Image 1: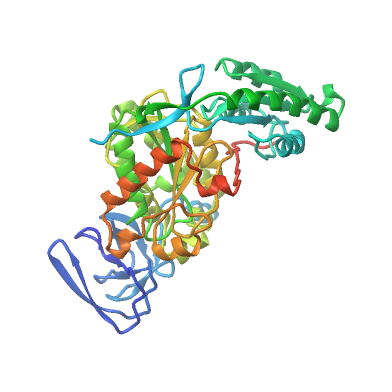
Image 2 (image 1 turned 90 degrees about the vertical axis):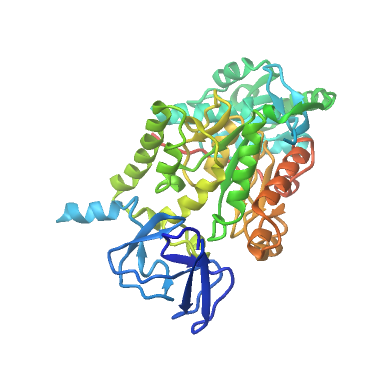
Length: 96
Length: 388
């Protein structure tokens, strides 16, 4: 976890589902029980993220939740969508 | 502060090279096979394979022209043989005329004028052999890092890129800038979502405005095509490595730019007129951005990768830096340095930055990178218009 306002942390090694990890960031610590297997380099939620809410990493917005995300859940392309460069959305709204 | 020194070659226009290549520059795709055959005959020559040079118009013509001239003018090139077919849009004589302004040796060979492939190879090889002999008589001399333009790039990124290798390159970028040199930040696509961080570091309102303009233009291309930019970037490999969105990739990529003020935003393949941190407007595509920076005068490129990559340039050494130890070990043929030690917890970001800085001095003085040893001579122009 990079910044206190972040909602996700990065696994620096493979973490199996069910494992309990402690994430520490600037004095604050989060106990996270993994709901999924998290591969090396992948992200998991350290806070609950409701559908439609911005997801923060590096203290900045990296996209939006397209589903409700629970603590310990894998956060990736199945539940996170980028907000930028979305010509597909413009094309869809143009079609009505 | 530790002063960076290297042994390089001074050129007639005052710039300093870290290599002493003779470049066979094919102005048209029809000439690339002849160029390749000349390089096979004559040691010390390099060339690049491409599909451009004819039936290009407007801004697209200009961009290709600027790229050709930039490759020939790069200080790592001792002399150039501009090789044309004869009937193409990008005329060899015009490009040679532009290159002659650098004061370096420039010759023209035209396949149609010579009377075909064999005669053109013979003529090109004859000129090249003499040029290489002259080049090899030039000695290296010591120079400061202030003479360097260092390109920075990330490709095949993973979630570690923004945690290890990119911040380490950011440290190096600051060191180069502090020594009076220039560091180029590129890949506009991969700065979408992080542009505000760089705009805040712009030295003037004009530079700040340009940051938003180049980002907007890149994003508008996706809008015009009606596509989700994620279908191309992040790539499938990026996603497998843990990156979920373009913004996430951008925030990691922007770390390469260190912390110093942003002096200038320049066009693709343009030579910076300011020293310090400079942003070149390029796509995220590895080979196209590499080519743009080298054509813009970069003598050395730092390339971080989490998935591993063989990419190299015919005229600029590319130092490959792994973001994680497993990839450094798995792709050891291609990766020069390992920044995965930061993830392993055995080395600090600053200490990896220091190692990269020292490697720049060695490579600039003649140490070969893995991409050079394997003759990984990639080249690709960012096309901005159709062919007619």
